[in-house]
Structures are given as C-alpha cells and as structure tokens.
Image 1 (cartoon, one colour):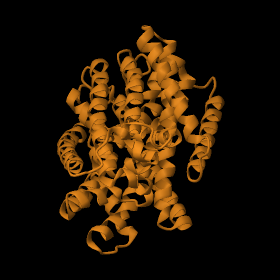
Image 2 (cartoon, helix red, strand yellow):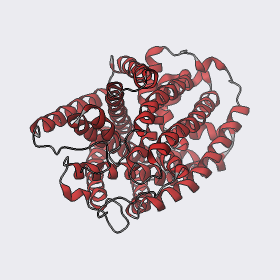
Image 3 (cartoon, one colour):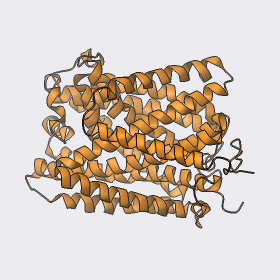
Length: 458
C-alpha cells in the first residue's frame, strides 16, 4: 500500500537488539548510575526494584501486544482501551518522554567529556569539543533512521553484542578485585527516601527503553507474537546486566564512600582505572561516545514512528506522515531533528550560562526526571487501560494494579521534598500536561474516528 511502513522487515532477534540500543548497559555504567546513586549504597536494590517494576509494566505491553499492533506504540494501547482522548494525551506524553531522553543523553556526554579527558590524560580541553563530537556521532545515527529499519537493527546487533561482552568483562574484574563485596547493598541501607529517589531518577529509567519497539508493530514479523516476547527477553537480559553493573560500581567505589559517589561526574572512570587500569578506562571513554549511535538510533526510530502515526491519525498535520523511498518517516525525522536542535541548543545555552559547567549536570538531571515522570504517567495510563479491557484477572487487573501502586509509592517518596533541578522538571511536566489537555479539549468533536484495532485508520 502507498505510504505504508515496510511490513515484515524486522525479526524477533532484530526487535530485541533494536530495543536494547536504548537500554544500553554501557550508558547505565556511567550515565544512569550517576543519578541512581542517590540511593547510595542501596543502588543495586534500586535496580532490582526497577527490574521488578519494569517486568510488571512490561506485562501490560505484553498483553496489549497480543491484541493490537501498529506504529502508534503506547498511544495505540491507551486509545484501544480508553478511547481517542486518552490516545491523544499519551501520544504527546511519549513525544516529551523521548525528546527528554535525547537531550539528557546529549547533556551527559558533553558533561563527562572534559572531566574524563582531564582525569585520564591530564589535558584540559574546552567543553565545546564534546558538543562537536556528539553531533558528529549523531549524524550516522539519524542517517540510518532515514535509510529505514533494516540498516538500523543490523547495526544495532553488532554494536550491542560487543557492548555486552565488554561490560560483563569489566564488571566481573571489578567485583573480583574489590574488598567490599557484600549482600547488604540489596537492603535499604541508605533509607527509603534515597532508595526511591534513586529508583525514580535512575534505575527505573534504565529499563524504560524496552517500550521503544512497540511503535515497530507495522514493521515487525508476527508483531502480535514477537513484540511481547522481545520485551520480556530485553528486560531479563538488561536486568541481569544492570544488577551486575550496579553491584560492581558500588563495591568497586567502596560501600563506605558511596555518599561521595555523585560528587564527581565520572565515578565509573575512577572505578575502572583503579581496578583495571588506564588503557581500559580510555577505551571505555571511546566506547561511550560510540554508544551515542545506538541510543539516538533507537530513540529516533521509535519517536519518528510515533509522529508518523500521529500525523496519520490527525493528531499532527498530515504532512508528517510522508515516507521516503526507504519506507522511513522522512518528515517526522525532520521534525524531530528540528525540535531536538532547537530545544537542546537553547536548553544547553541556558543551563550553561546559569551554572557554568555544573549546568550540564543540572540539565542531565532535569531531563532525566522529565523522562521518568512522563514514562511513569504513560505506564499508569496503559495499566488502567488494560484493566478496563481485561480478559484475565491476574495479568490484566492484578499485575497492572500492583505496577501502578509501585509507581505511586515511588512518586510519593521522590517528589515529597525535592529541590532544584527536580522541582523545575515537575513544573515543566505539569505545564506540558495542562497544554496537552487543553489541546485535546479544543479538538473535541473534530478528531477522526480511529480504529485502534488496525494499523491504519479505515
């Protein structure tokens, strides 16, 4: 059919590795762990809670994936169960969620570039070098999106296999050479407030990329079977890896020293250098920037499908549903790049001008918090939606309800006494939701009658 995504283009193993591009264990090693470390010595427990919460929310996606599959992704599920207005709101929540992901990845790699180079070589370089490097590496990532889903997932397979081998190897070496090996890290030794703050700002965020394959429902082989299987497989794989990583970094840094873990933006480099050596640390830095490709590619692929579907369904101007000769959402990609460059550029300038080099850390935490809040709200919406269209009490009502309760508890502990930049993230998120709701109300009676059971509105 004209202007349709390429069907049967990505297999089960392709889905798994395409999704793992956003679940990058290497980025967890030195990126997500930086904010998950609010849990201090209990960081491994925070990651365990994150895995359990993700398996519970993953169940919701698994159950929905057996009923409907399209490029709509999450908003297809909420629309299917709760109606057009829920679909509209979820679609825009997904946009800010993934856009926030792109920007906090950008700010993190800029943030660590100068300190890592200085720590490893003694040479101080300007921060704009990091900006240039991130931009240079992002170009082939977005070009792969332009070329279609096949080049994307094939490149993801190669990079992710190498990444997993590397991360597992250095984690095991750190654990073996550490003196602080203890199971106490799997208890709330730093208090429940810190534990859930680490959960909401870091560990849950580390798992949220598994939903990035949901918008590939029109391009996957046997999507109503394979998407659900791929989600479970990804969560189990990354769950084991993240538990290994978080444990290695806590015992490697020293359990008694964890209160100062976040005092430096490069704790992972310190641990690797002290336990393995300088050359491994330098390779780790180089590999970090290489991983920008997988992160941007997975996020960009998912969000362009979301924009494509929104335009097709009347949530955005129809021009953004146009595909190129590679069956990729061309105009959706251009829109994403335009927003990313504008928001990322302005935001980076504002944070840097206000806080100097600390601005990159504040920007990282700010967007990581927005991303986590958005995905938690999305998951609560789809959880309630699954309960409404339930077929099985345990999987469609009980498990989604437990998932929502965990999310609400985490939100309570995390936002009760937050300070900057967390409070700013909450304010922006609240304003964004108000704007989206107003947009939804203004379109009442004007929306297309969407058939969420099908890939295309008939």
